[in-house]
Image 1 (cartoon, rainbow, N blue to C red):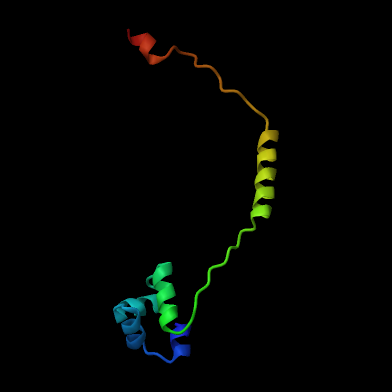
Image 2: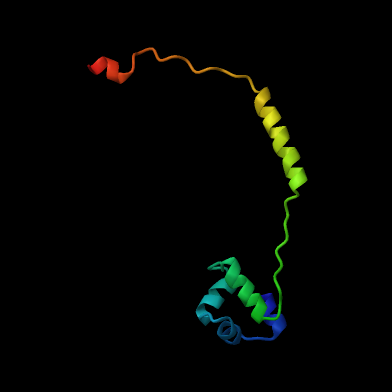
Length: 94
């Protein structure tokens, strides 16, 4: 893990500080397991880094796109469902 190397920590030291077994940290670094966001943030914090989450979705743009999709959906041809050729089951049985 690049953050661990930049912090100058061994796997054992970083795992100890983060409260994880070294084997789990090793599995994360090798790509055999993926940490949850909270564990990932904790590992980065202990290594001296900060994780900031930013909003990637622009609400105005998303609103425009949704509006366009709904307009397209309304423009699709409507084909009503055909009526059943047979009476419902309850009428046939009794």
